[in-house]
Length: 176
Image 1 (cartoon, rainbow, N blue to C red):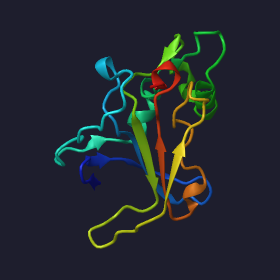
Image 2: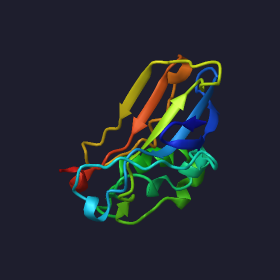
Image 3: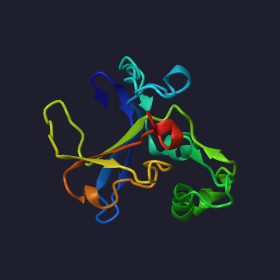
């Protein structure tokens, strides 16, 4: 799929939880430039286009899920207090087969984390523009931790709508 001003994206298609309806997933799409270095406490800057439309940006589920702990904004990891991060717990419960590969250090994430995910049951085509209603999901976590990893579309996309989930800077790096 090609998005003007963003570039060409390659996503995934997964079945919805209730009826098995095809839902298109596009994960880890940058909406802001990295917040590292001089941008650390500055207002976010727009992201540059991902590509020129020739080669697709890999926004697939498999690419995201195999390293999600490196895609969230910096936050406490399981080793910082001896207590578990709820995001890690949720992932562990949903994907027990991958639990062995989870991080164990004091921190998760990277400052290059201003990303979003888009879930839709219908993609625009040359002769059809579905113009579906859009719901934006902002993850919880008391502005201290979290990400959209566990949010997914669930049963929401049994209906014709687009779900956009965003990540934002958390903890001390989220304060301007």
